[in-house]
Image (cartoon, rainbow, N blue to C red):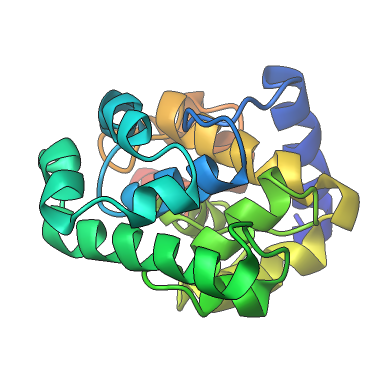
Length: 220
């Protein structure tokens, strides 16, 4: 099956499974979303959602967060992976938002990626979910599934993002990246996955084709 045909079929399946696409990280505005996404690196969304109520009580906006000490921020997020580095980044990021952007989260990729701890994926999430700008953030689930489904070659996240943007309509990107994440978590684990029973892997997976061919060869 051609990539474009697979992409169309996948999009229809995911839209049927997830007609709505709530953002899994709890937030109230672009600033709290930005911080939550930054904190989610190498940590589950569930764990981030457990610590952000206290963190955002201390600093609900850039000006308030900038006044917090790094130890105070660290105490609130200590259970997260890479907590010391994240605490320093949240503090400095908040200071720069006040100093450079009048306490507002900027609405360009360039300005977002210039902030401490904010890479392209984090900026893409904020641009798409806070400001409605079409973007295709690629996390580990999306990178893994794009390769498993034969939509990209599993080389780099940059290549995966480029391939997915070429395959899917621009107006679908913001919802689709969340749908793929939801599907990966609920239906398509990395290990011990029955490809034949999966509603998407059953017709897309290169690995499944290899297994089918090996079984056929064994029978012959």
